[in-house]
Amino acid sequence: MNGLLGSAVLEVAIGLALIYLLFAVFCAGANEWIAAILDTRANMLRQGIVQLLDSSAVAEQFYGHPLIRALMKDGEHPSYLPARAFARAIMDIATPLHAGSISFEQLEEGIKGLPDSGARSSLLAVIQAAGQRIEDAQHAIEGWYNDGMDRVSGWYKRRTQFWTALVAAAITVAANADTIRMAREFWLEPALRGSVAMAAISGHAAQAVEPVLGWSGVTDWNNPAAWLARVAGWLLTVVAVSLGAPFWFDVLNKIVSVRGAGKAPEK
Image (cartoon, rainbow, N blue to C red; front, side, top):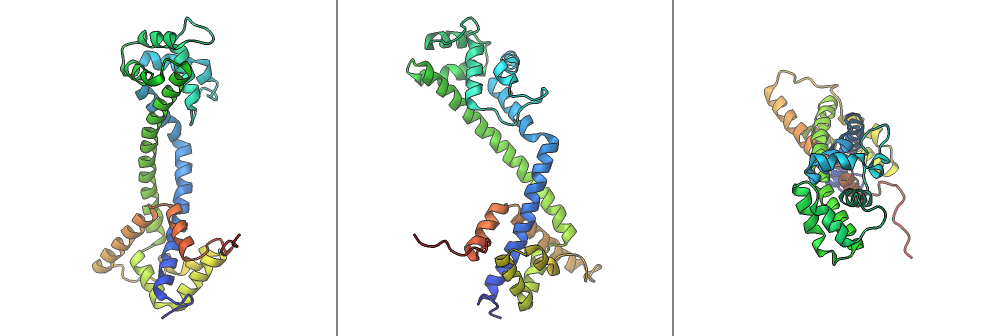
């Protein structure tokens, strides 16, 4: 039972990790496709900016500013907005009577003249530590924006995790990727797990894992205990796949060279 790599446990782990990696890559691609269709990044960015500005009047001026309009294509909200463009647009909106370069005092007075909102209070707070220098004030506004975008990134990650779990559940059931059954088959079939281990090295993973996937050969349709075990195996697969492709690639990379290039030569 030692197997090709000298350890049956190691080969079973490689087989499962390889399947999780393949499914996770598929989920990542599906996530990108879903995000593109729903325009998730742009919508969440707009939501985050509107919440950050906390004023419909300021938000309307912001999206009407030439710097921001230039980043839009056919009136569609961009998926990414540089912090520098955000800061310069806000500074320009706050000082409409001063064309060209402005001083720190002019910016401060302009911010005080903005509509009473959370944005005005926040902007006054962030420029307090600018040391009366307009460059430092711009950097402070950029930092305020970046902090807000960190929160938006958290929203996007949670949405992505939801879709990943949903897609993972769908392909797990469709492929009958039952972790418990797959682990058992790998354990009982040394040749099978050996071929999967070799596939991890050679890069022919899809063909190697086919024997442990699918619904062919399932005969216990009316067995409640078998279905309970199958559902438990599916849940384990969904949880594992939801960890993401980078995680499983790193796991496999630590066990065996997935790239098939071997260790890098020493300098």
